[in-house]
Image 1 (cartoon, rainbow, N blue to C red):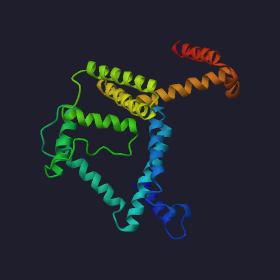
Image 2 (cartoon, rainbow, N blue to C red):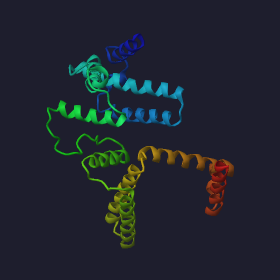
Image 3 (tube, one colour):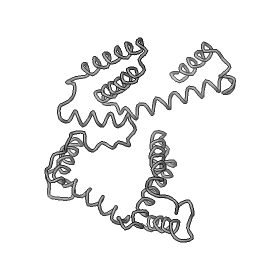
Image 4 (cartoon, helix red, strand yellow):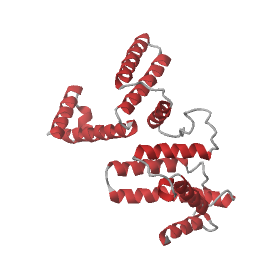
Length: 259
């Protein structure tokens, strides 16, 4: 733990008298964008299966945790030791099949069910005001949509099969088309949101992580577009081509990938 203690000491010095002016000027709210950014960069490293980058990005994310804990310690709210104690206690408490005399669980799904049961017991058995409670509002919209739908499905609010999900998606597409014809921008915005919800629902039924799937699609779009620019002789040269020539390059890149 020497390296971890060293990191904590470095953070305390940066925040202390004679420390870094930028670090000393930060608070919990000013650090929010950096926390989100570091989480996204960890995901980028995971998507790229780049272990060297992952080690760096996990360090940057850990710095954000240490930073927030240092701020809390300075205000007397809590310190990093309490953070570690709380998560350690929670892991032991919610894994009785590992750390206590509890019957073994049969597979990952049973572990999730046990985890949820223990969470309810920790609340004293009190029911939540809604099955949707607990979904972080700061999640990316696509990921939050999937989490909300999964929580609703746990209490039976779900299509019995994929046929219903796809039929509902087709219905939403028709409603978007009607809204587009009407020219009502408010209706268009609403119907487009309904289509996104329908797509996430279809993804969930197919066992697809909608957020991860869109990240992969974004990466593919970026990769192919950059390849098109390279084939054209650069970004400016590609921009000078008409749409049919650009599309021909796109098809050429796709064909090359498939080959």
